[in-house]
Length: 482
Image 1: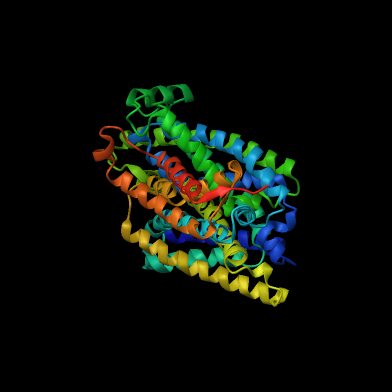
Image 2: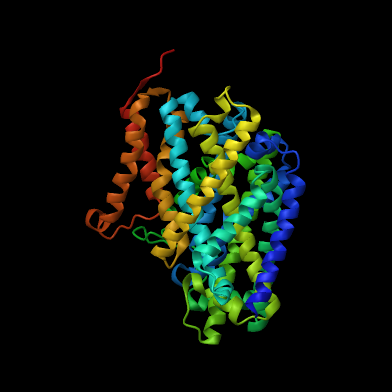
């Protein structure tokens, strides 16, 4: 299909987003930007969060990993459900009771000012790395599919995408994102379903026949029972639970949408309904992955991994499916990038520079400061996307989850210690504990064959990281005085 025609559809889709942003961003203020004036509809938030949780990495990497890991990713998804229950009935009541704008204010109230800054700092690092890795994957596909034909360099493509995101989040923030995420999730899921139906028809298979064909190829195995393997179901389920608790429940980007809902009860309904929908959607992505490999076999295509879905959608499907794929891919990209930049802006303004605590600034001055920070994070995203271009990892979902085990571990330790233990930490020592923990985990991961032999440490490294942080906090703490 003509790259120019594909590009015209991208522009048309973006103009629709701008129209939504203009409508929802009218009369917005800092309260609208940070938490949507606490008036977001829980059903819209739940549906939109499906798109944010999935991202372009899920759209491309989860199907691409099926040949190597079968349906093992669904084990992690079962863990997600456990994690969402913890968020709904442990973390959300805490955040609503304290009426938080930034969830890291909890660390301030419970552990101290330095702990608070440390938690916010680790979130900023985690979200920059995760969001830019997701952004890189989709931008790279758009570059190959469209922009190379116009001789536009990769850095310019990235800049264009970031400018697009800035244009529709600059004023409205969370208030706008709740609506744009809903639109984008709809487009992404439509693209997923249409691609599944097309391949099934092309292979002349029904649902049962296709699952049987996947089983024969070894693509549809869900549960792995070898305790030494990193895919062992107990490891994967536990890792999935803690990944959700940290990457959603202790993540300002995900939680600022939830706490923008008016009541705790509605926010809990949002989390539970979203978790069920997410399980179904991820299974469909895995099913699509199996179909893609069956189709690739029929086409005698040697391509695997992240490149498989784009190669088939853009090179071996009718033009209308190619357009749907590109729109769905962009729809998977924007929710993860726009929410990340907005959440990073919120955290930096509220937690790092303490904008809301500064009585010397007028609302107009605070708004200008917030906008400058928003622009700065867009610039940081550009730098990190270029870094991932240089790394060029073949499976971005594996890289993102691996990075999360290092950067979210300290957050897991901080929040768990604050909630479960009635002890006061020596606040000034907290940053050293939180830095030492991922360093120790990096050494464990790098030399795990020497240390553990055939036993593989996978994503459960996140739990180990949190436990080391927790232990370190215990060692620098003392009982709370009554």
